[in-house]
Length: 48
Image 1 (cartoon, one colour):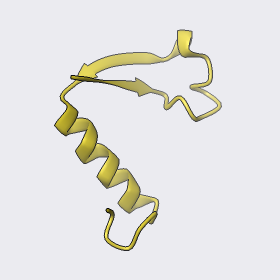
Image 2: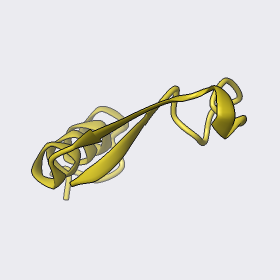
Image 3: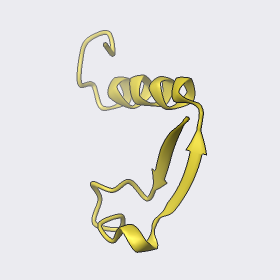
Image 4: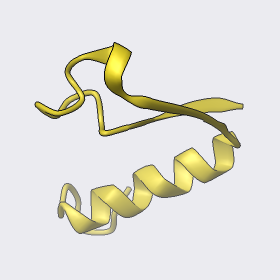
């Protein structure tokens, strides 16, 4: 299990940890989300 935070902790809206939503999710779900986000942000050519 891993924790998902929303809004993201690195955003202005998520800067106060006491006001963000926390949810336990499967590590695989978080990993796949991270890969998808990297692709959307064009951090790498193939998303890895």
